[in-house]
Amino acid sequence: MVFSDVTEEAQKYLQGQTFVKCSMTSMPFPDESFDKVLCFHVLAHFKDGEHGIKEAFRVLKKGGRLMILTPNKYYVYLSWIMTAIKKSRSGKRFKYDTTARWLYSKATLRRQLNTCAWSSIDYSYFQSAPRLLPFEWLRAKLIVVATK
Image 1 (cartoon, rainbow, N blue to C red):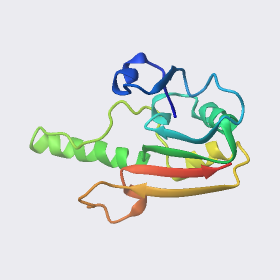
Image 2 (cartoon, rainbow, N blue to C red):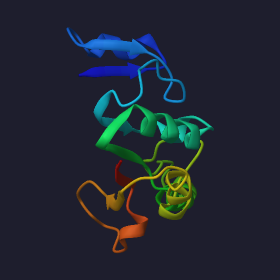
Image 3 (cartoon, helix red, strand yellow):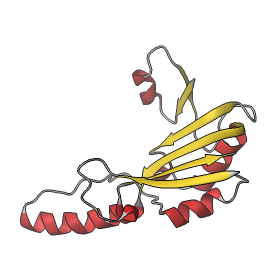
Image 4 (cartoon, rainbow, N blue to C red):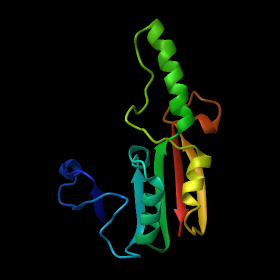
């Protein structure tokens, strides 16, 4: 197993694990090196998500899987509205990742993924308990599993 991040900060949490400092848009690995690529809360933090997805596709073996977990843009938008309402009443903010700058919905992430020849792509949503939002597409996290 190999872990990577753009900063060496992540390495302090990976005692005894293989760590490579790199960006998802430029991975120093040969083509078809991995069975799985996990991309948790990464795409929302850099502008060129499409290039990162293409790089993941390149380093995956045939049949390999890319799993993406990213903030759902509709949840973040709802959070902005709820924060504005709650702040005016209580001064507290509704929880969401304030550092996520490039947000995705299922449709926008699908466009990014369709730049590669995936054999299958499955989409889902996740919300930690309690699950207060009645509509799946409003849940906090968008989860995608793409198979090469």
